[in-house]
Image (tube, rainbow over all chains, first blue to last red; front, side, top):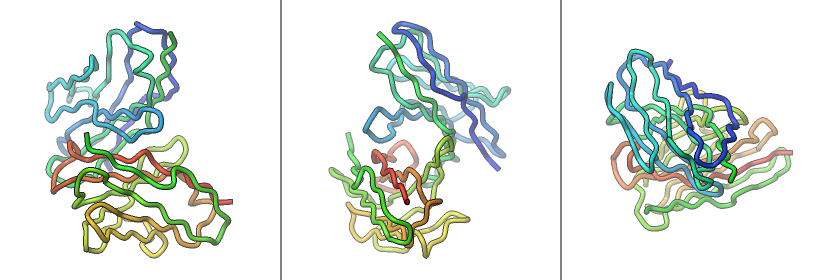
Length: 113
Length: 117
């Protein structure tokens, strides 16, 4: 079945460091891909998405490109801040269906000043 | 933005007892609510989808008699774990959407940590 694999955490970086969180997926069709972020004590929030191959999603300095050839959707940010400390979830979904998000395990990011 | 709350944020109970978890949409009417479960070091897994006023739709492998879901109003859904056992210890997360929409408008609660002794 469909699945999402993301890199094990936790990831600890210094402020202004470059961030990459790897995400690969297995899908029988052509899903939409998402990154969600969960800040401490809060619910998951949609960070960015891409709905088709070669699309780039971006938000708050984060970017991810839908790579069909490598079945990947890696999350990147050029310069992280302490406020980026959170848990990041990669997910896929087949457009049009309610919910039915398939999540990765989550990667905890800690950014030190 | 839209806010979804869960209560309690954590609960500890004895084996064999039942536990109710509430999920509320605070500033919008949620026609659909979802319940997820996350075991340690595992992915969030969808348990069930509920539409206001109708029976929940459970994912394969989820016991509907054990995990009772009630979505009696447009702002409240409850998940009751009946006769809880230690293997039910998990992180339960709800989400809500104001319409028949995709994940762009799915708003998540902060989760409830259940520990069954």
